[in-house]
Image (cartoon, rainbow over all chains, first blue to last red; front, side, top):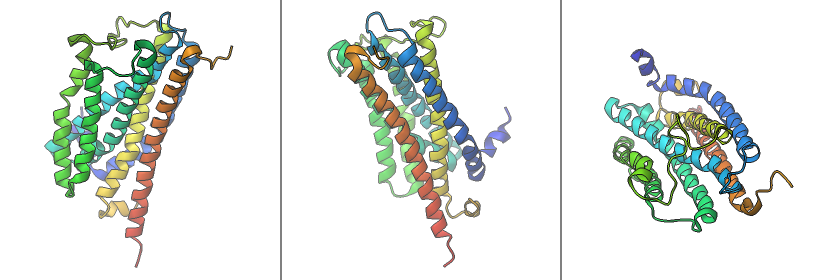
Length: 242
Length: 49
C-alpha cells in the first residue's frame, strides 16, 4: 500500500475535497440499498414460522446494532491515529462519528425493546448483550460530554480519544456476550457467513440493509467530518476558497 | 389483506421502521446543518470590514 497516498488525505484541504466528492455517492448508494433492503425485508421475505411478522424488526435492529459497534471501532481507530500522528483530521473524524454512533446505539436498543416486548414478554432485561450495548451508549455519551466540557481543543481531543480507545474493550464483550454468558438475547444469526442461521430469502434484504447503513454512515461522516475540519481550520488560507 | 398489515405486530414493526428512518434522516440533516453553520461562520469571518 502506498503510504504517501494515505498521508495525502491526512492533510485537511485534501480530506475536505475528497470527502465532499465522496459524500453524494455514498448517500445515494446507501439510501438506494436501504430502500431495496426495506422493501425486501418488509414485503418480500417470508414470515418467520415462530415469530411471524415480528421477525421483520431484524431488518432495522441488526443493521443499527452492527453500525453502533462499527462506528465505535472507527472512532477508536481515528482516535489512535489522532494521538499517534497528531492528526487534526483524525480527531475531527472521531468527533463527528460520536453523535451518529450514539444515535445508532439508541436505535439498536429501542428496536430491540420493540422486538423483545412481544417475543420475550418484556422490553428490557439486564442480560449481558443488552447491558454491554447500554454501556456502549454510555461510552458515546461520555466521549461527547468530555469533549464538550474541556474548553481547550487539543486537551479535549486527547482526553476524549483516550476514553474512546479504552472503550474499544467493550466491543468484543458485546460480540461474544451471547457466547460467554447465558443470555435471553439470541445467538448470532449471520456472523458465521459460511453457515448463517437464516434462510437465503430472509438473508439478502438483511445484507443489503447492513451494507446500505454502512455506506450511508460513510456519507454522513464525510459531511460531518468536513464541517468539523472547516471549523478547526477556519483561519487557514485554503478555507477562504471554500 | 394489505401488505402493510403485520397482524398482531403492526405497532412493533412500524415503530421500528419509523424510529430507524427518523434516526437516519436526523443524522444526515444534523451533519448538513453543521456544515452549513461552519461555512456561514467562515464567510462572516472573512467578510471585508
